Length: 143
Image (cartoon, rainbow, N blue to C red; front, side, top):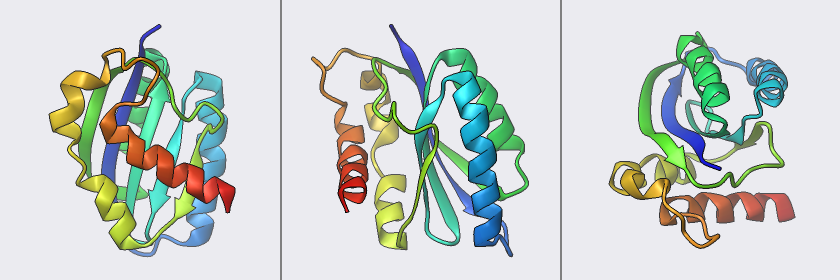
């Protein structure tokens, strides 16, 4: 089965509080579960990085809401296309607050260079561009 994924970076609006982010996550998890969408969100206090994955229709519907959100601006789409597998199946929307250098690392990954290869079969292994994100997330979960 082929899935769809989107990775993007954006800037949080001025005055966004931890409570605002918590409410956003509660809403996102409920909507994502209904649509069968999973993924991760990183936040450094001023910027977001998000990776969404799942059925094409669900990802498109969720991403439309994200684009209309007043919680952030300057959305930079890093990847939007088919993928062979989902890698965050247990997370309807996991979130971690992290420092800016970690977030920047994921925002500058070679998403566009890797884009043509994300939909290919990688013999059960995640594409290179996702390996660091998966490893980072696994380290957070083991702490």
